[in-house]
Image (cartoon, rainbow, N blue to C red; front, side, top):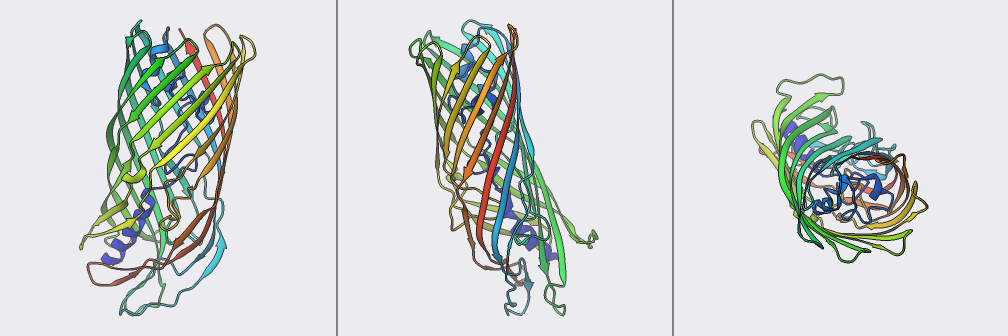
Length: 441
């Protein structure tokens, strides 16, 4: 039983990275409802307390104290259609069991979530601004169900992050400001899969078990940026966010589907998750008193995610490496806003987001592929100091191919473990509805 449990947890390592189905990899590009209405265009040049994460130097524009709060409701569709051999089959004697192929479509695995953010900027001095922002820059929430065709690879996967960014912006000269901040990020991951396990003398597949692993950790990083008011009409922002690593310490549990936990079914587990370096360029240009054009270009070094290593600390200790070989990616977006009058502003935008995943190593818990993002939004000034913003966006995903061929591994007891194959395509789409309030005082 010891080695069986270890190998179940090893296979769960592929779940430690996943797609939020909102941005490339497992990133979430939803820090602000204002920028969401333009598909994130101009995210690093906005006079908005929720622009801190995109570019802390942009705070220098604030001439008052301000508070902003926002949430985006994420309504996604994620389905896998394809076939799998008997997933997670473990056997002895070196004879491979007969594969039982099934071609099916999963239920919608994407769960409805709300992505919040909150920011405060203090107008400490004409040349110094201080702020803090709390938001969720990475995350996922999928549930394929215990009876889905992908159950041997993933039944449920959740990643939650809470990122706290205290920052300061300093005006160097009248047209240039520098900003910097810390990133203090709490990370929590819950992973589950359903596997067929068997021991000597038992029929193949007789040990039908459910495995769950949970882990959490804090990670630290930093961010810095420049903001330039090049001309009265033209703003430019440059920013960088450092790489962070979460060393997840947690617990694992192996139980039967009836909920019975076998002897020794609980254990310690560890894994590592990388959050990438990011370089951003933002700009806005006032075409006239009513129209403003925006753009964003973001380069993300996802190649830090080469593989995932997870270890279960039982006797014997077991570990495995799941190759992912993610590539670096680009994100491009353009947008425009139209100020109708002192009360109403309308905006729209388009973004193209390139996925870091590869067809050869894409896993079921990463239903990510290249995507197009269209968005619209409006802001209503409710009074002298209070404004409300409502935005809507839709993301169109290319179908993501999965081609995980059946692989064999050997645990510390020299017993053979069949990871099972999974071949098919993932279909995604996402609707985003954002609401934001800004208050200046």
